[in-house]
Length: 116
Image 1 (cartoon, helix red, strand yellow):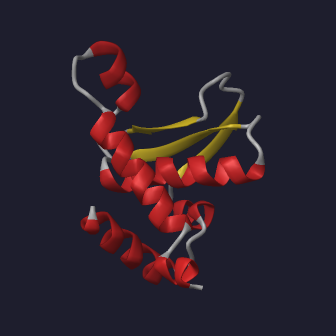
Image 2: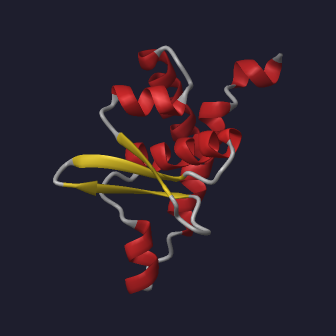
Protein backbone atom coordinates (compact mmCIF):
# COMPACT_ATOMS: atom_id res chain seq x y z
CA UNK A 1 0.00 0.00 0.00
CA UNK A 2 3.01 2.33 0.22
CA UNK A 3 2.77 2.61 -3.56
CA UNK A 4 -0.62 4.26 -3.15
CA UNK A 5 0.80 6.72 -0.62
CA UNK A 6 3.47 7.76 -3.14
CA UNK A 7 0.95 8.05 -6.00
CA UNK A 8 -1.23 10.31 -3.83
CA UNK A 9 1.76 12.36 -2.70
CA UNK A 10 2.75 12.99 -6.33
CA UNK A 11 -0.84 13.85 -7.25
CA UNK A 12 -1.12 16.40 -4.42
CA UNK A 13 2.23 17.89 -5.39
CA UNK A 14 1.28 18.15 -9.08
CA UNK A 15 -2.17 19.64 -8.48
CA UNK A 16 -1.16 21.66 -5.40
CA UNK A 17 -4.29 20.40 -3.66
CA UNK A 18 -5.81 17.39 -1.98
CA UNK A 19 -9.33 18.37 -3.11
CA UNK A 20 -10.67 15.40 -5.12
CA UNK A 21 -13.08 17.64 -7.07
CA UNK A 22 -10.27 19.97 -8.15
CA UNK A 23 -7.94 17.10 -9.06
CA UNK A 24 -10.68 15.36 -11.06
CA UNK A 25 -11.39 18.60 -12.93
CA UNK A 26 -7.71 19.14 -13.73
CA UNK A 27 -7.46 15.51 -14.93
CA UNK A 28 -10.50 16.11 -17.22
CA UNK A 29 -12.62 13.60 -15.31
CA UNK A 30 -16.27 14.58 -15.57
CA UNK A 31 -18.22 14.56 -12.31
CA UNK A 32 -21.93 13.86 -12.62
CA UNK A 33 -24.45 14.18 -9.78
CA UNK A 34 -27.57 12.01 -9.96
CA UNK A 35 -30.12 10.23 -7.83
CA UNK A 36 -28.46 6.86 -7.34
CA UNK A 37 -30.68 5.38 -4.65
CA UNK A 38 -28.54 3.42 -2.21
CA UNK A 39 -25.41 3.65 -4.37
CA UNK A 40 -22.97 6.29 -3.11
CA UNK A 41 -21.14 6.62 -6.41
CA UNK A 42 -19.24 4.82 -9.13
CA UNK A 43 -16.51 5.34 -11.71
CA UNK A 44 -16.92 4.66 -15.42
CA UNK A 45 -15.25 5.46 -18.71
CA UNK A 46 -16.50 5.59 -22.26
CA UNK A 47 -14.24 6.06 -25.28
CA UNK A 48 -11.39 7.30 -23.06
CA UNK A 49 -13.64 9.83 -21.32
CA UNK A 50 -13.65 9.26 -17.57
CA UNK A 51 -16.67 9.89 -15.33
CA UNK A 52 -17.27 9.95 -11.60
CA UNK A 53 -20.95 9.54 -10.73
CA UNK A 54 -21.96 10.82 -7.29
CA UNK A 55 -25.21 10.43 -5.42
CA UNK A 56 -26.70 13.92 -5.11
CA UNK A 57 -28.46 12.92 -1.87
CA UNK A 58 -25.19 12.58 0.07
CA UNK A 59 -24.03 15.39 2.35
CA UNK A 60 -20.99 17.43 1.30
CA UNK A 61 -18.51 15.52 3.46
CA UNK A 62 -19.67 12.14 2.17
CA UNK A 63 -19.63 13.39 -1.44
CA UNK A 64 -16.01 14.48 -0.88
CA UNK A 65 -15.02 11.03 0.40
CA UNK A 66 -16.90 9.19 -2.35
CA UNK A 67 -15.35 11.48 -4.97
CA UNK A 68 -11.89 10.71 -3.54
CA UNK A 69 -12.68 6.97 -3.56
CA UNK A 70 -13.88 7.06 -7.18
CA UNK A 71 -10.87 9.20 -8.14
CA UNK A 72 -8.82 6.35 -6.69
CA UNK A 73 -10.46 3.98 -9.15
CA UNK A 74 -9.80 6.45 -12.00
CA UNK A 75 -6.11 6.71 -11.10
CA UNK A 76 -5.39 3.16 -9.93
CA UNK A 77 -7.83 1.07 -12.00
CA UNK A 78 -8.84 3.18 -15.02
CA UNK A 79 -9.91 0.20 -17.12
CA UNK A 80 -11.72 -1.75 -14.39
CA UNK A 81 -15.48 -1.67 -14.13
CA UNK A 82 -16.24 -2.94 -10.63
CA UNK A 83 -20.07 -2.93 -10.98
CA UNK A 84 -19.73 -5.07 -14.13
CA UNK A 85 -17.15 -7.37 -12.51
CA UNK A 86 -19.32 -7.79 -9.41
CA UNK A 87 -22.50 -8.53 -11.40
CA UNK A 88 -21.14 -10.66 -14.24
CA UNK A 89 -18.00 -12.45 -13.08
CA UNK A 90 -16.61 -14.36 -10.14
CA UNK A 91 -13.71 -11.88 -9.89
CA UNK A 92 -13.36 -10.50 -6.36
CA UNK A 93 -13.35 -6.71 -6.44
CA UNK A 94 -12.48 -6.48 -2.75
CA UNK A 95 -8.80 -5.67 -3.43
CA UNK A 96 -9.80 -2.87 -5.84
CA UNK A 97 -12.21 -1.42 -3.28
CA UNK A 98 -9.63 -1.55 -0.48
CA UNK A 99 -7.10 0.21 -2.73
CA UNK A 100 -9.64 2.92 -3.65
CA UNK A 101 -10.47 3.42 0.05
CA UNK A 102 -6.78 3.63 0.91
CA UNK A 103 -6.31 6.19 -1.88
CA UNK A 104 -9.21 8.28 -0.52
CA UNK A 105 -7.87 8.27 3.03
CA UNK A 106 -4.33 9.11 1.90
CA UNK A 107 -5.70 11.96 -0.24
CA UNK A 108 -8.03 13.47 2.35
CA UNK A 109 -5.81 12.87 5.39
CA UNK A 110 -2.20 13.42 4.34
CA UNK A 111 0.48 12.62 6.91
CA UNK A 112 1.06 16.36 7.57
CA UNK A 113 -2.55 16.72 8.76
CA UNK A 114 -2.28 13.68 11.03
CA UNK A 115 1.04 14.87 12.52
CA UNK A 116 -0.57 18.20 13.47
